[in-house]
Image (cartoon, helix red, strand yellow):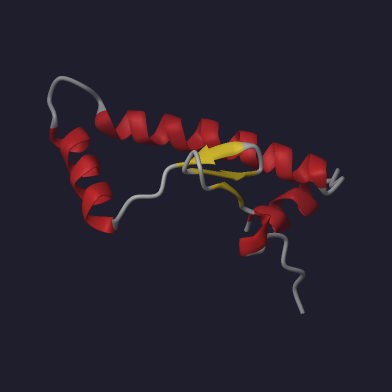
Length: 86
């Protein structure tokens, strides 16, 4: 059986501030409708490269999260890190 690396309990919550943190990164949790409209607005705006904004934001955020989570679990090999990230 595959080892689970993340549980819901891994997410830290600060109720008074409304913050949720996973692997050192603050998370913003919104409903599906909010996220869909935000994404559509950025992708359809001719003044900015919305797709590039989403791609770069995802790359930066998940790289830091994966690096932090791998460090917390003392994973060293690329195979271990990729397995955790999957």
